[in-house]
Length: 523
Image (cartoon, rainbow, N blue to C red; front, side, top):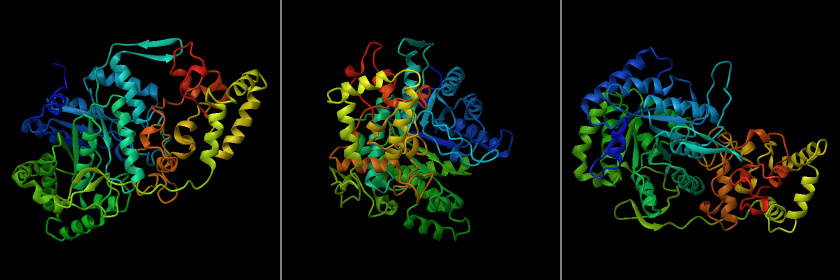
């Protein structure tokens, strides 16, 4: 039996309700916070009810102790560890190096995330990396588990197979239809890329918790599902209510209730713990495979109270549905409401009416693309001949400048040379997404706004969804998995790279495949 397997056995045992707890490493490895985390883990290992502790990686965008340090210490106590693996600070080479190290250390349970946008550090804001998105990182890990993957048209790298067990996150707690549907569309991609279990984002509404479970059942996504039971303190409640923690929302009714409870001598702490215990009981009643518990400055005694009280609440869990319901009434739900239970009926709700596109830019760009960059298009052959004729010193740079000028005016092009406009409804992720994500949104948007530019810049995938709906297409119907950008093509002509088979579409095919034989195409 492999090391770190208790969590895996528990998640796939229908008779077990898996419990994990989230620990946040300290800034530095010698302070009181580090000692408290180790003491918590030591008590949890002795108690035996937790299947694992998860360890965040630079949570909130702030630098902290690397999670494997705390992970190794806790693993030696006999408690399983679930290490967060974030894309924000590492390029793909560093990811591989770190994965080899973690596999060597026996830290094989991963929660794969895009990660929070960096916050101010040494001499200002660090450079956000996001070389891979979470779907691409899953694909990389899945290939490492196989021990073999292609690095170029004529080369493969081999290594001893790793044995990582990958978890992912999904957020049903989105206000807008576009945000919610793109979360579910990305979940499909994560499952296809090798996800083995799912944890929900922080949320507080039973109907939304049931929604994602019902969705996964109907879509035949047969993965273990854990609900996130987050227990905030008053400072975090204020930050969440003000929208300062990406993707985490405290609805107004719950915010007012917590503020009223804070007038008690313990500032409402026991009330928050009991609410978490009720939610834990509800998740078990809804058929979840387990729960992922967390919150700032919680002691193991606090967690014991939650676990003990949840047992008392389990028998009558339906009684707490109305008490816990708090999501905004005007928010979009995927399913129709069951008036009897306050949960969801299995029938999908009517989507909002699709709006006409605000401009003709997308239809025109799509038309040009189909004419010149689809093998069946009438301009495909002459376009290929012209571009290939210009693929020589002195002429290729002129083509690159002409292309960049056209596409900068039309799409805000960043001249990456490995263009993904056609897959993303002609929205450029290099200029339109703060995290450069190619396979779906992060979880940080709020009311349709980008987490990095709230109130100033709409999430690229909210705009993408609107374009798909206006064109009569679903979020799942767009192009499939988009490989990561090849930086060797930076500041070159993507048109020439496409026709020569050097872009990411060409790299997906066999070495002798020609552009006319490839199913995907680029603008």
